[in-house]
Length: 203
Length: 203
Image (cartoon, rainbow over all chains, first blue to last red; front, side):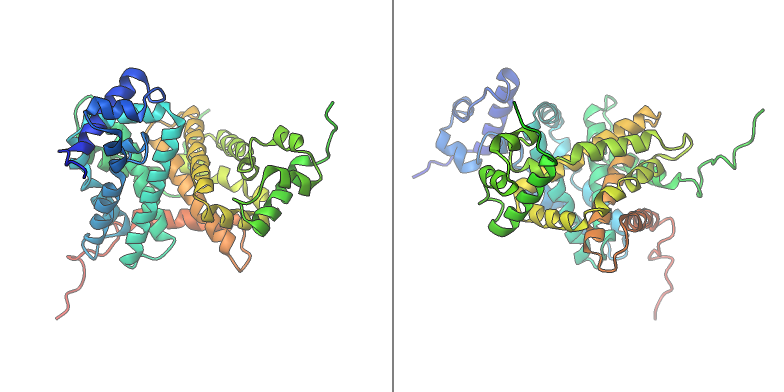
């Protein structure tokens, strides 16, 4: 019978990140991760399919938080506000472990294999958010567009937060990115942007 | 010396799509694709790395069209308008072969391996569009947000176009999706959406 290993998942995750940073992701084996964590390979495989998945096990929980957040938004909330509120509700999860998030991001940026997995994770998040919006009665294509826009905001905000040297929280960056997206869309000729015709002539 | 094979790429692509539909993607081999096209395996590998890439060789050309479109937009164009114009400029490429695009989309939807590749393609397109916007002097995060929003619009418009039974063109769907994204962002409480406080009370 399998012995119960307290916090095996967390120990494996920390051991994996240490080794990925020390030796490189490609050079690290599952056997080494298990040994560093003081656990067996068998225990590793009870928790993760492979060494890549150690970096992605949070995806299911994140998706649940976001879809719950959308489902639980006030009935009158506009689609993008429901998504934005749901994204903000995930902040504490990340803020507890900003150093880890930063190391993980650097690792992903350096490995196409991890990048593909991360991109797929975000695509599945957007699909789940769109589904949660449709369940609230938001029609297509508004549901997909609000969900995709929300995930784009999340990506940009997350990168801003990772790099932020002033220590501003993820919610700050989420709101800034959302405002910026509104500005990108709002500042279109015909609305508020200066057009050739509207500009004063020189010369 | 290699014999010159007229339109080898196109013949391989058509043969591959026929076989993927007849036998299934997983069951089809490169040898079969080459044989169906009346070409050798060696010729196949001069054009494509593997049977998956037959479905993605257009990505580089598409990226070039989009980045050229952004670079060539009028100097005063707002970021998202530059992206929208660039996306519209790709329409003729797709409209020449809507039946192929529709078959390709169905195949991708049914195969996670192809979906990952497609998602990665769209992510790289967004990154290239953001880079082209930065080259126009658009700062971050506006460049990334406009690029990501543009690609979200493209995805939604493309699916609408594939499914459209009225035969409306891709530009129609691009404009509709862009308008819808504006509405999703515009209809936020505090701007135009009805809020609890603003709604007439019922007795």
